[in-house]
Length: 443
Image (tube, rainbow, N blue to C red; front, side, top):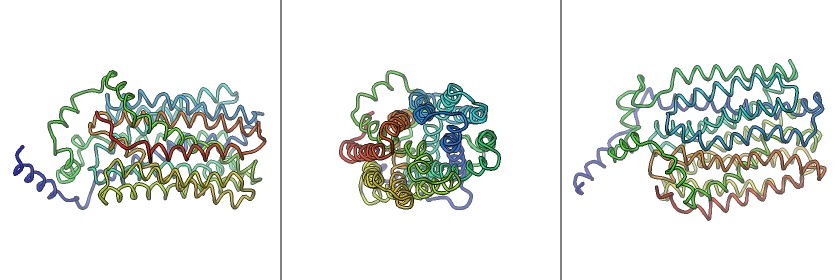
């Protein structure tokens, strides 16, 4: 292509302005956000019920740690094939199957009475939910141009924090009113409502009957720069040989290790925060429902701000990779400081304040981590695979967090060492994203 035609093409792309009025792409984000909220209601309800379940069924702290981790192990492992499956078979069908599975299993958890039953249901829940975020990031990549992907991703990732913020309040209220068994039935049933919305509203942009020509042109304004490459990517499936070769690039390992550390601390919050407030800070179950929601409310704001910060760094002239990784490193470093101070906090007010700050700063990382999967590689067909590999590393950390924390609490008689370990891991994450991850993956 000569210089004159290239400049003409660039000017044509710049002339494609943001469409006004009805924009279906933001409806897609709204549906993804609803699914994110329900997803985290279903995975967080057991943590809220854990103090009552341990009391009613005489389950020890160490054994509850294994129950809580039984979700994360299969979730971590299944992130690898689930990302490949989304790239191979499509977003809509995989997400539909995923939501149906996790909703059914959440309802069935209310019937559990033995440790093995709880573990079985949590394993299946982990398998079912593993598709959610590889599919969501694939949907976002399809529906948004580059300049909006960070913001769009931050919105549906914000749903995770909203779900976690609602979970202590809603689940506690339901338990106090009806008991923990009906609570699982009600929370699980909400997923079926979200599933209906997804099936009705989602399709690929080119196939969606409600998208306008103007909006479709705006969505595709970046990918149209190289239409031939785009068509090739659509027709070419990701082979297992290509998938395995991704592990030969060091940025993949920096992302996996960095996310391992971040998800460890996130799952410390998800699985042990209510118990920490009850046992370490002496709060009642009713007060725990209120105070345990505060970090996640702050986290929802942090998710939105993190996406904006990374986009602003890019607009300031840095690369898309730098915008994402530097935001993640900043959030991880600030979270490490908050958690290390929390380890020595002896008043409920100070502890909740520090944990709230820590979740806010952690959440600055959430949207950039997922947007990173679209920005660390130039070939669209690998996006879900790279996102799922990074998520696999993260949820290995998430799988270890409940077990190691439960062991440290039992052996040390408190949460101090558990919090110190969590803070150190946050520092490791800051190093991985801030100093090690400096180059794109050359595929």
